[in-house]
Length: 239
Image (cartoon, rainbow, N blue to C red; front, top):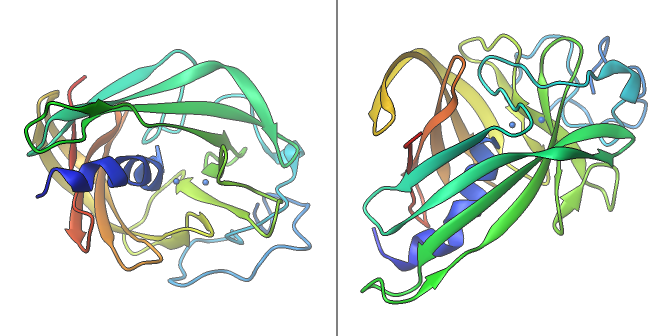
């Protein structure tokens, strides 16, 4: 892994996985007449993903999905594997309306070395918006300064399913990556501890890079690693 790669990759890595990560629906969200057809791979019942027009009436005020809990005030710290620096993800107390939906605001702050010797540092930040529908699916509604659902052709996608199933595939956003659930019994040992029965999701970015993200019940995102492609970046939960 080069030192330069993490500087350009961490924000994309976190949003893709948290896509904290990724996140309406036919039968669940009624205001979807302009939604795009389902994106391959298929397998997510009763969902039309992605969509530019989620119906605010089909969303709830909290995000308590066990695999991606986003309670206001919560935060997670991640170490950058094989490189100096780390990432802090925190859920803001305030909310923002995106595409008519009252969205949860998630801020990602990275402290990364710009130089191979670690002498220079940068702190790139990003702000993402998520909301949970009344079936428990968490939707990714946008990223500040880059895209928002319903604007300039951008569409909301899934950050985390209410009940992940092996082989389920879905779009995390448009534009954005495609995701597939590849394991329901994953294991990981990270600085925060040892975890079992993880939901493991592989995401393929438009440029072809593949990320593998593991989620623990009640804890959320545990680890992210680059499977193929560049830039290469991996993160592990510290606490």
